[in-house]
Image (tube, rainbow, N blue to C red; front, side, top):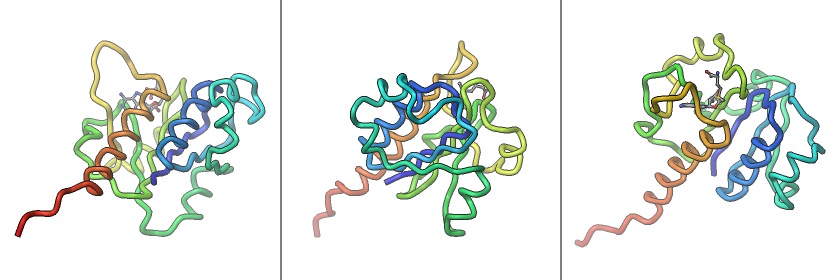
Length: 158
Ligand SMILES: C[S@@+](CC[C@H](N)C(=O)[O-])C[C@H]1O[C@@H](n2cnc3c(N)ncnc32)[C@H](O)[C@@H]1O
């Protein structure tokens, strides 16, 4: 339904958990290299449980190669603490790409600057950032909620 992109993820259990979120929502997980772990990592597979093998997964050498392989109509949203635009103001469309940064450094400044209008944030206070898997869950399920509402809208009475 959606596409979740992790740019250079570092912590295996986060990616394992996000794999489950993708499976649960019919979404594809895109991992942009270099990864901070092997795809056979024990902790990754422990967090992903036996679901991991079923996760629709695509691996990319760079974010540019991912973009080059998509149609020009593809929509990307970049999740960062450095934006003022809340994620819940976006009207997500099916197949949108939700792009998340690495655990220690976030998304590269250059990528954020080049896509400033497409940067969105999860408003929060009292902490510098949320856990990566938590951030994915919040935004992905908001996108799914919007789709579900579109699917279940009751037709108006004539
Ligand atoms: C642990 S955070 C990275 C922290 C990094 N020091 C930074 O300031 O970007 C990992 C990723 O989770 C996502 N994330 C975490 N908290 C977020 C928030 N409040 N709003 C939007 N994205 C968030 C972003 O994609 C971020 O790159």
